Image (tube, rainbow, N blue to C red):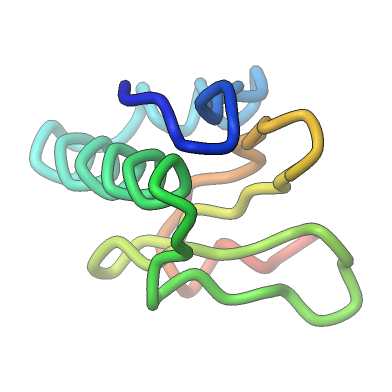
Length: 98
């Protein structure tokens, strides 16, 4: 993880439910999600936002990141430099029961 110009780098915290979802993913998809999260951290630490990072309507501070057929839902606190992974699921299931 690299440091950004404005101070300390962003950190990722994975909720227990999201950790379970990650463990249940096939190895290929799990690697794909890991690369997407690495790219997210790298770009945030450079002061940029990934192009495929979109805010969720009706949920301030919550975003989605595309990773192939899967979506990563996360909240972000710019002041604390903290990204909290909320959910990692297939795009057809990720928005159910939010």
